[in-house]
Amino acid sequence: MQDQPISIKVTLLGNCGVGKSSIIARYKKVTFEEDYISTNGASYSQKMLNINDKVFQLDIWDTAGQEKYRSLGRNFYREAYIIILVYDITRQDSLEGLKTKWYPDLLQYGENYKILAVVGNKCDRYEEEETVSDEEARSFAKEIKAQFFSVSAKTGDNIQNLFNSLIEEYWKPNFQEKISEDSIKRNFSYRIKPETKEEKETQKKKKKKKFC
Image (cartoon, rainbow, N blue to C red):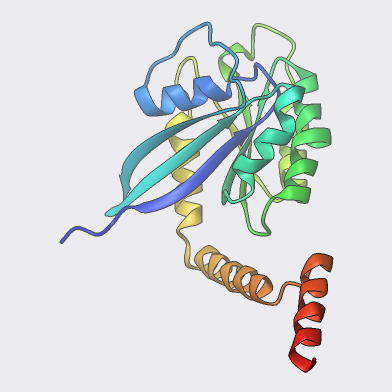
């Protein structure tokens, strides 16, 4: 009997227009479209793959980069263990967005254990325009303990390697142990969560009735 696929939730974060949807499309279909409509809220896609005789099911969430959808996006990376932080190498503001918006949000609203990647998209344009320094992006990745990748959704350069590397990192024994520890802590925390004010009042009323 074939084992059930191992489900992994992956979420892409970053400013509007950095190419998150294009990266996913290239990874799934090996295609590229020059003009993509901006994602509204979030979009979901799935990919099955086999790595080292293990079958994985990637549940991939592409979150909208517009400010008005920022709070909504938090719902989609809260439980994801693989987070891909995407910037456009031709736009300095997109790397600043990772530093000042998306990564701080992740720290505040995400779970404890994550596999992080800082990804510079559009590497096919390195020689055409003034670009963000790789050294600066690598430094940021090192600071937040993330892997760094330079990719091109247009040419497909390094896209497969990006996802495969993160999945292999996810499946390492030490990270699986962290996930188990995290799950136990969350379950234990849920069982002993403090009562709300309303719950305390209800318990008081029950006790009064019991002794009347």
